[in-house]
Image 1 (spheres, one colour):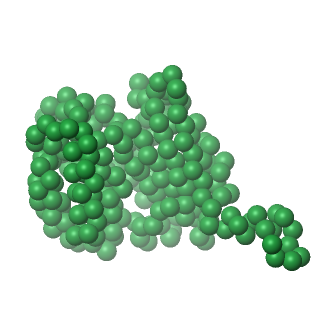
Image 2 (tube, rainbow, N blue to C red; image 1 turned 30 degrees about the vertical axis):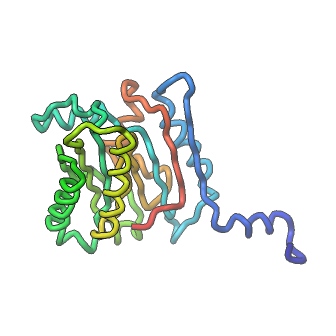
Image 3 (cartoon, rainbow, N blue to C red; image 1 turned 180 degrees about the horizontal axis):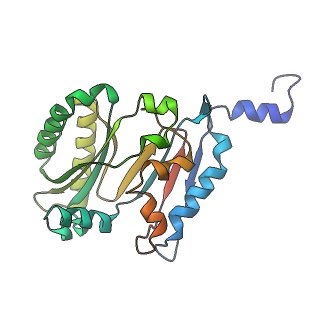
Length: 231
């Protein structure tokens, strides 16, 4: 301990690079309130993360794949909505850096080849709905595009084999493209934002806020992390 420092000052120094991590698990099964309560808890932990010119420096949430929502997306695209409940179904979330937006079509073609090489068939590609006005001025300067891809493996395989393929696919995407994979999983999806916890639901208006309002869309295990996002 440095001389002439109070115990509070020492704690503040030790927690200089601290972050907040919240996990809410309901033993009795999924609950509509799980996601909302976890978000509220993270907001109360905001003092443990940093700010840049008055803006929160990032937070993210990992939740179960919203299968009802993806079933609706698939049905709207005249695809079989039951794919959303298949063990071979997975969802990938990506950020495309703002500096690469002019080459978006090119990188999408690269993704298609990489998915095919992994034995996966893309069902649906969509640009996720976001609200730029929910960001601060610093975040808007570097705001990426948010991409969502739903896919299935062409052939049935043991779960550990499919999960290993997804890990290899994510690592290949990171290695060969400028895309930032948020999540590539058969179980969960990740949303992130350069800002505070209170802003994440506003930034993803059609894919996040409805789940805070609709009791039929339950979440068993929401996991929030604050102070981790770099666009």
